[in-house]
Length: 313
Image (cartoon, rainbow, N blue to C red; front, side):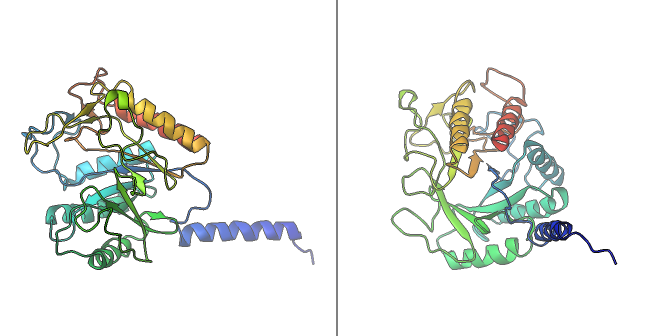
């Protein structure tokens, strides 16, 4: 009776184990892969006359519960090479519309993409909310319900606390962590794990609230522009604008991010933001109010190119 060569048996064994790991544990990273995250707002509703938004999406002024819009956005995320989206979430009762749309996004994501995943980015949640309630709700309603669609970081579901706005966390009040999750804080202070804004440009006055250098904790952010000078409802006490014509900032941010990848300093790059139209950090295809390049896919295509470069380093 002829026997299988021992080397062939070992080869078949490892192929079998690799296939099993991908089927049973699709969220586990098996190789070093630069992860690309993207901020995504789900609070839009009847905003065509909003004076705080001067740019117009290619899809029109959509509602965040529009299934067709959600499918289009997820298709674009796949096309860009996005690994995960960060959804600003404001608790169960503090903003029911955002909570509803967060659930809806996960449902559409489940049916539309096998690659893109999502995680919760906690913002204002109401003074009555505590960490235990938040952790239990996210675990039950998002992680357990969508085990193949929730994003894992360092082997656990990721929760981001946006410390700038969070009503349950600030730099002087240490965050109560939960062993079920990987938790990081994102903001503009030296105490935050992930920085929201990247490089300091003192000669250009950006950002005015400099929170220290990045990368940090294996993460670096990129931002295409910042401009809240048109916000009037309500007006902000301090407003500033950086690169309204989209001529240099995004390239400078990506250059530093790519250098950090080459130097093995980062595993995660986050992009701020897909559809933050009030602060004009939006890279969603749109008709831009002040950009020199009027192609509505200008930032989208630039983002896709940079992601491809990052993935190939």
